[in-house]
Length: 121
Image 1 (cartoon, rainbow, N blue to C red):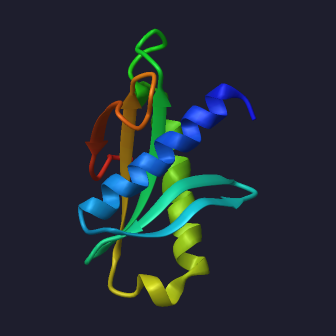
Image 2 (cartoon, helix red, strand yellow):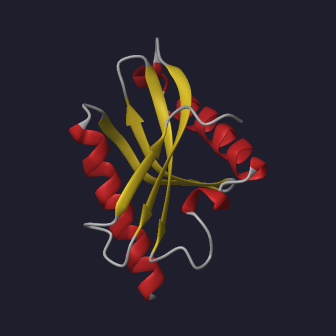
């Protein structure tokens, strides 16, 4: 596995721990269908949360959130609807929400973490 992939996976692990510390349950990791992949699916009291995690070792290629453009947000929404369709019992009474977590730093375990809630589509 390439170093960038290792950093990305470590960022997803850290993001999952962070969300759990806020009281969310991680329902799925790296859920894949032909249309794409969801990094994390978290469950809150009233929401199914599709979480896109972007990890960067520095800002040389821009802020992590800059990689989540309108097309990516629309794809995440469609993937979230597909996840709900595949897990209807877990989703009853919960709305769909898209969040983004950006980590910036050489070591994801101590990198700066930013969390955007309810990203607009």
